[in-house]
Length: 618
Image (cartoon, rainbow, N blue to C red):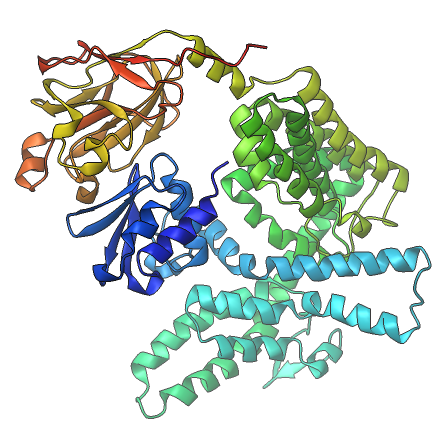
């Protein structure tokens, strides 16, 4: 199995470190660096890094050729640096606005993600402490309990302080001014005034509600703060605005929360908490089945972030979280499904992926490796996991199971549920969530990827038709070393004479770059083909290209894939030579009977010859 993290670290070191990188993008096969000083590059170290095929210099870029795994390596670079896709989101105001719902999900995700693990970790401590009290292992009157209760309870109690920081970062407000506002909301005398009658602010009556563990008030007031600060910085004199702005913001913001935002949010929270309570009291089977069945679907689309605040709102209004119990079923069901894949598959690569995915799903509640790497691509295991989540979630909710702390659902976090509801139903619900998908995967099965590899290995030659009209030239004539020396795969190149690319065989589109400059296909026989229109044309950013297909789409030989304006591309200074190469030489190691000279799309271009030996079919 490829170690993408090791490749990413080696590449970053080889190009002279993060400080030597001005910018980084990637295309179908390579990382494209713009470096500050190319003399700092260690080319020998780069080419010897596992996962790196070769390097090239072109168009002012230093290119590190990775091949099909370039998105994974790019993502790993983002995790260890400020480069790449995973390095953090651009502030909200710099991004495309999108529709209101997507913007809301983005906001919730950005605000809650930084605090989620601290919230989950302290919640898990709270769960273990509650279990210890239930089983009589610790005396609640002891000083040990006092310390453990404080360290496990403090973060959720003072949640507005943490949200003040993350909300300020998202809305581009002054963080410490936001903290000053949040501090006022949980100040001891303010907490003591909750429920008191006759409170006024300069004659304006208001009701003091609790802001312990609250979510809505601080997010709303920090959003207002961000707009107020921008206005005040424009209108106030430079000599006073740095200290007058926070003074005005706090002076207006805190009373605004006490008089308007807090009471309104308390009403909304009460409605939400009451609605959840009604649902799980009167029709718990439906509530549990929906949460248990759809939670992982929400995760895939990022919609679960819209539900995370409901957990804290429910806790704030009722002191318990009923919504979270069926999520245990959803998480453990996907872990059970991937465990079934681990046991059943005969594909060594899939088994090596399933093992750690099973452990992370069960022990940590992290199901992304299982879902994205295994269950969802295999389809049936993911569906079986949903079935387990529906059944398990319905049983848990029917048993009145709830948590008194925020935890990330996992086997380790089960103590959060102990003592809260019917314990027999808890055991049955969790067992059903795990066992049902596990058994379904073992008995009903799935299409093991080994089957496809065997078919490809046992097949004879795959005929590749010309995808474009033009003139065939050898790969060695391509003005790009990575293609010319066949580092990326064997095949031929074509100099196009028209602006259309067609499918060279019946296939699935496995890569469709939005820039339109390249398309990756997988034939029904298993052969994988890359059609790369021009050299370095990714730098055009999609100009002069019109992509006609999407990733995952099934196409027939002769279907239109891409249209492009060849004249405009050449006027922009780019070579239109189009490599057409086989990218899985482990199954198709030889290209033969290549055409030469003029060719029309649909005419035979070359044959990809399959390996002779094959893994025995099951």
